[in-house]
Length: 447
Ligand code: FCB
Image (tube, protein in one colour):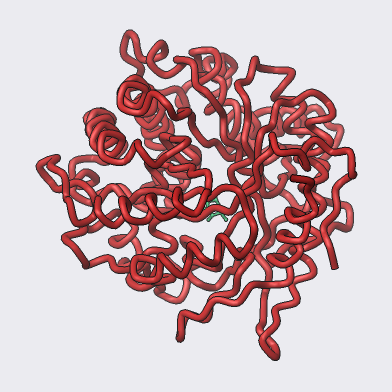
C-alpha cells in the first residue's frame, strides 16, 4: 500500500517540506525530574473521571530519556522537519527564573536535530500551563499573558540558535474552549464567558510575545497554529444554515479573524453578545500584528443543526461515511474547501499544515502494524493539500500527526495517532505501514 501524489505536484519539489509532529506533555514523561513544576494537565489527570483509564503523563513515551533514539526514528522516516513543543513548567521556575536543567534537555535535543540536518519547528505553548499560574486564574487572568511574554523571552533567548520556526500557541480554540468553556480539557472549567475571555488572553499573549521573539530570533519565522474543522449545515433549512454559520463563527472565525483583521466576528454583537470578551484599548492592534506564517491543524468536519439554547448542535452526517477510531469523519474534500475558503476570506500569510492524521485501533501482529485506514487517510489529505495549492493557496509544508503513538489528552493512551507504534510496557517503537508509506513518498522526490 502506498501514498501517491500527482507526479507534477509542487509538493514533491524541494520547496515543500514534510515533517512529523509531537507535543511535550504527550510524549516526554519524566514529570517529576529536574525540578519540572506541575502543569494543569498533571492536575487534570489526577482528578478522577477526567481522563480515560485514569491515564497520565508521568511516563508517556519516556521521550525525556529516549530522545536520542527518537531522533533516529525521525531520521528513519525520511522527513525534512520535526515539530515539537517546549514545556513551560520545565524551563521556568515560579519566580520567572530559568530552570537550566530543563533548558539543557531542549538544548541537547535541538542541537542534535540540527546536526541531523532537520528543519526545526517549535511551539511555545501546547497546553501545559504551569499549575501555579492556573492557581492565580490561568488564562482567565490577564496577567498570564504577560507571564507568557516573559516565558517566550526566556526560551527564545536561550534556544533561538537551533530553531527555524517559532509558533506561539497550538490551537487556542482547544486551550480556551475545551479547557475553560466545555471543561473537557485542563483546567476543566465550563462557562461560555470563560472560554472566550481565556481565548482573548491567549491571543493577547501571542501578540505580546511576537516582538520579543522577533528581537531574540531574527533569523526564524514566527507564527501561530490554529485548528479548524470545516462546518456544514445538516439541511437546506434556514435555521440549520444559521447553525452552521454560528459553528464556523465560534470555532473558526473567532480565532482567525482577530489575528488577520483585528476584530472578533461582528455578528456576535447581535446574536450572542455573551460570547464577546472584555477587551482593553490597544489589545486588537497587539493581536493583529503581521505573522510570518499560519499553521493549520486539520482532522475532520462537522454537521450542524439549529438548537435554541446553544445556537447549534452537532449531528451525524446523514450520508454513509467512514470514521476513524476516535469517531471523526474522514473528509479530505472538506480540507480543500476549508483552505480555499479561508484564502478567499483573508489575506493569509504562507501556511503550513502543522498537524493532520488519524486515530486507528492499531495492533502489532508478527512485528507489523497494518494501518491501512491511516495510509488511505494520509493519501486523501495530502491530495487535498495538493488541490488547495493548485487553487492558489500558499502552503509550504505538511506535518503528519504524529511521530509516534502518545498521550491523547482526555482519551489517555486509548487512541493511537502515530506513524510509529509504541508499546507502552517496553517503550519499543515500531514503524507502522503508514510510516513506511510516508517515507516511500518522501523518498520518491527528486533531489
Ligand atoms: C490536536 C492536538 C494534538 C493531538 C491531535 C490529535 O488537537 O493539537 O495534540 O492531540 O489533536
